[in-house]
Image (tube, rainbow, N blue to C red; front, top):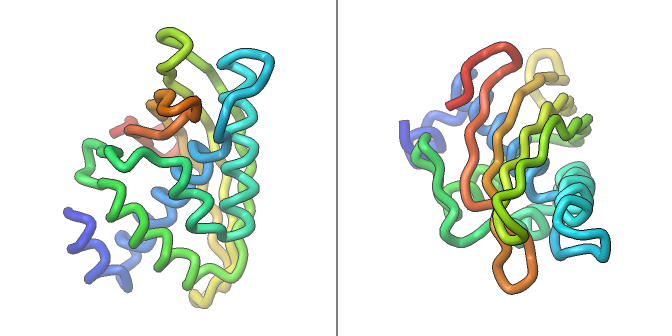
Length: 164
């Protein structure tokens, strides 16, 4: 299903879960902009922490600043589609809370990395229960562009499920 089709069907449970998942992905990935004095691994850890804060503050622009304009994933999402999903998600969620664990950082060199994360998410919303909670595994691809780490692609799945 494409981003536009998901947006049209956003009222469905499946579309809502997909958008919740994508937000979680972005929040986790986008957490660290820039580099730190401790090298690329420290910069990536900072990036994840900052992304968490931006997501919990529902800072759409802050999150998008951490994503490459060339972002693309196997589910057909691109930079503009992610921006649309974040807009809708933040309008529907009254609050967002994330608990992120960095499982592994794989550096290809000082300019490319894969982050493997586990993210627990909770949010207050206008659904029948008024709250939602989920947990996902993420595999994020990042690269340095103008001295800043940017998300260029991602795969994810619910805990225990295959990443795609």
